[in-house]
Length: 190
Ligand SMILES: Nc1ncnc2c1ncn2[C@@H]1O[C@H](COP(=O)(O)OP(=O)(O)O)[C@@H](O)[C@H]1O
Image (cartoon, rainbow, N blue to C red; front, side, top):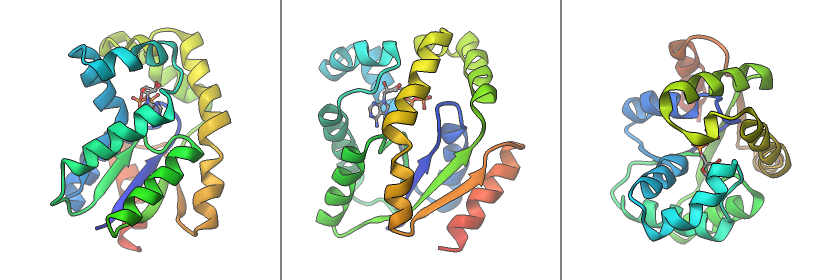
């Protein structure tokens, strides 16, 4: 199994790249943001619990998120590899993912970060908010809060994966195809 973690700030283009990469490498794409939004829309128990955090631009608590993630992975026992998008976002999630993957005889092959500067990303999210209907994309204060969450809780993961020799950063500015190529170059070299 080649499991890839797509890493990057909100708006960095993880979801966009995932659409191309999952086809190219026959990976199962799991976006925690998408799974949460599905649950919100369907008003499930999980959706009810996650809503207050998501609407404020806060991270959903680790325990809830990790349980959901493991349930998702377990739905795809035949997967060739998983493309994780939006998970892990905290050190505790990264450790939980390692523990879980080890328990099924697998591991993270690489963490690939899409890099772009904050101001450009905030503009991208505000644009997306005009059409996506996502509450967390429509308010600059909520967007800024997501960046704060990222800087405090998610950025430290770079060191975590770097220490394991698994961290790769690519320039996330350019056309979608250019960026797919940069990410592919990393995967092809694994
Ligand atoms: N791994 C996670 N841990 C905690 N909360 C998460 C996680 N993934 C998604 N969420 C919740 O879902 C929201 C939207 O996720 P996503 O679409 O991936 O966001 P973004 O566009 O900000 O990268 C996050 O702001 C957070 O509330």
